[in-house]
Length: 160
Image (cartoon, rainbow, N blue to C red; front, side, top):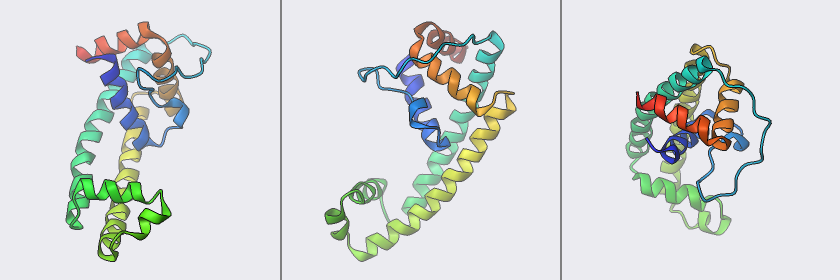
């Protein structure tokens, strides 16, 4: 697994978790996040982080299918849903959405919010089940973004 793939997966996980934006993975060509004071990450903490990450991946995969099903159950495609969600950022574009689609979108969005909250709860529990706190998980993730050696160790452990 390439480091960029790892951190794109973590980006999705953190978005579902509701982790602060400062802790989400940066794209490789984006400016580096502000440096944080490095802390010593023990082998045990790395193992716990890897276990939590793997559990989060499993939860993400399971909820992804549910999210798609929730959108499609309302008669929308995922592309339609995403286009409407994007148009919500612009009042002019939002006004152009047919009322029927707006209702479908609202119903799907409500279901998605419920599914995401459930996934967040599961992910938090998965992290805490490894004996890491959410803060420790975020700290390790942030440090791995800034420390290629730590990032490589995590990637290697994930490949085991």
